[in-house]
Image 1 (tube, rainbow, N blue to C red):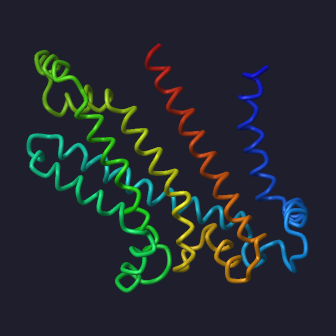
Image 2 (cartoon, helix red, strand yellow):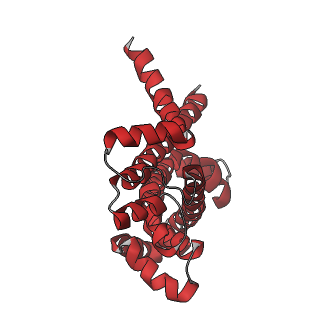
Length: 246
């Protein structure tokens, strides 16, 4: 029974997310019950489904760029040619994480302008650290004996990297990418400040109008999105590693 409940819970949450986003009358009723006395409950300038689409685009593009760049840098600094840059890359990525995304936006807007681009830049800088750190940790934790054994059977450096090291470090690297994407879901709400759209649009509008129903709409949708993304990636990871172990 417990297993059935645990299996059905994500499905129920996903269904609730779909109903809340795409069924406006039901969403309005829920918000009216939760926040009585408001003049408006539904954000009417843009549909919630459109804001979800924009939010997904922000997360997907910035997350993909962070994953590619983070893994590439992590691999580079663990090779003999890049070892000298190991501490520099980690220090720079750590400093990037300490910068608030809003500060990055403030610096990016004069150079890039308003809209999608500065938001992508801010999210990319903010989310690259977990990918870099996990890539380095995963590759550095591989037993040197395994690498030597691969070299002993005649593998080239490239073959050792792609056929031995990266597969062994894949789980740690995937965990870093997963963390990066989930962080991005929440952080992407700042894109509304510079006109990039996304769920931050309805949150900012709610704050400006002192409308808790708007704020709740954006926040709970982003939370659903983050949970769903984390769950799906986790399931894909488990299926992948189960398939490999069999």
